Image 1 (spheres, rainbow, N blue to C red):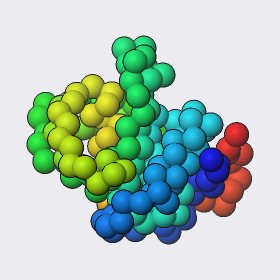
Image 2 (cartoon, rainbow, N blue to C red):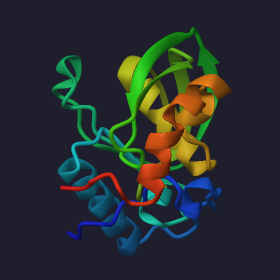
Image 3 (tube, rainbow, N blue to C red):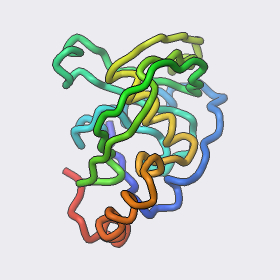
Image 4 (cartoon, rainbow, N blue to C red):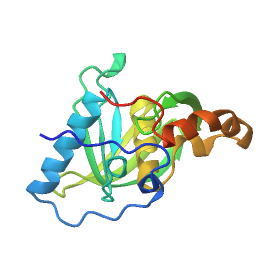
Amino acid sequence: MALLDIKFYGDPVLRKETHSVKEFDSELNRFAEDLIETMRINVGVGLAAPQVDDLRSLIVIDVSSEEDEENFEPLVLVNPDIIELSGNCVIEEGCLSIPEVRVEVERPEEIRVIYQDVKGNKKDLKCSGILARVIQHEVDHLRGRLMIDYLSSVKRDLLKSKLQKISRGEIPVGV
């Protein structure tokens, strides 16, 4: 497996939309494994392909570090599409591409997502809690959206200095 380079706030790739995956081959499987390894080494619970400069519609999730999710196996969602949303909750989020920044984000509590696995099989998942939140956060990455986009302009202004430091590479990141 290969450790991939995570792109940080200010990198234009984080604002680009992804394209659908059409080929389900061994390279896609290897890329998904590399994403999982990169996420784990960087102590994340999710990682989207654009965060490592790849514009395929693919995310990986591992919420096994959460106390109520200890038996969770990593998920690979290819071409995910959230088709149902319900409820609301506000929880603090972080992002591997925006180190040292945590913000409260309001998101739906429950979702239904359809996607494909690395072999191209269609899947349908209903979930809530941390899993639903991480899926929404990572799917946002596939659309070029970041967690800070949910903030009011006042709250974003309060983070402006730190965001500028991240984009200039002045905040130490990585493992």
